[in-house]
Length: 449
Image (cartoon, rainbow, N blue to C red; front, side):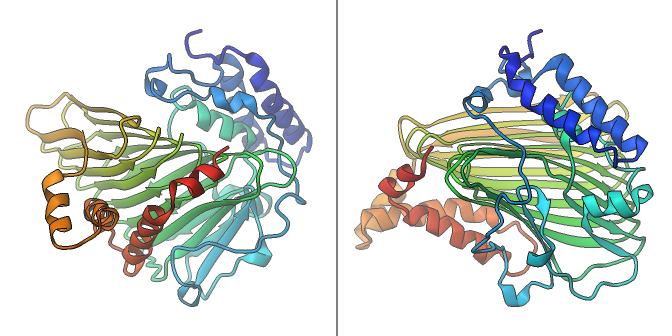
């Protein structure tokens, strides 16, 4: 019983939504069964609490203060601005989801090569469910990932990318998720699926933003199957409103010589969690997990990763850097697992955090779990203040203190951002960092819930 949310009434809205969803009778039998398994897991074990080791530093109890409703088509009907990680003139493929639902009138796709499917999960479930049945809900364990279980129970829509063998999609895919509220708090559960065939390639730019005054819960789950020799670049920016809860779980399977390269920039949400589990199942597979977070006020940001090296000659690299101000709190939990026989594994992880306030807090727990003897693995975590000597040097050159501090922070985060391979994306993310630094304390505190 240790992992159950003590207030069981918190589950009632989700149980009711699941019942209503299944009563529609539109889903294929396998999908209905998958949803039922997710709800069964949730009913049996509940939402996670800090008594669960993986959730030791992140408490979901603030969710209980809100009466979240399922969104309708009327919610978020008017969207004044669509955020993007690239200029509109350079955007060839864009899919927009509002409160977890695909909005075709806000989306557009350019010319696609043969062997590419990009679109809405809801549409594929209606028109060609057999194309996604072999992959949807097949990665990970619902017992190990309770929020994925909730997502599975209530999933309706999300982003789908299917690439046949050898297909190279040259233009990035811009996927925008907007959390938009009117007079009530909303919860939605987007489900994304990416399946890359042998030697295929794609770049996905994912942007999460919000509008409105009420709280939102975005409980996102993504599955990515990366075939032999395939390459996926996956970059995300999370800037939802300070009244939002953003929970994201990404589960990956990498075949022989496959490559996954990711970066996550987190500046938004009252409480956010970015969870990644990667299974490297083929020799030569490489996984790069990088990111940066900037938190202030009462924000809480959790980064939790697990990389499992299951065969010899696999590689992973992780680097996360963060900046915390005011009473913000961050969590980094990174675990590298080297299974028996996975010789010649090369795995490294590092988390570094700048603390700008004596009230801010970082909880770091890097781990290595190694069952092979011929490996090269390391981990580390550091936290500290700005370098007084560097600050003094800049001020001695006539640079005002505030600007000098910003220069040092931008330089600190810049090393992480520069690991991004996508052309043109680094300036956009560095601009986001500069905008965050330019905000006054009064402005940011005024947005807090």
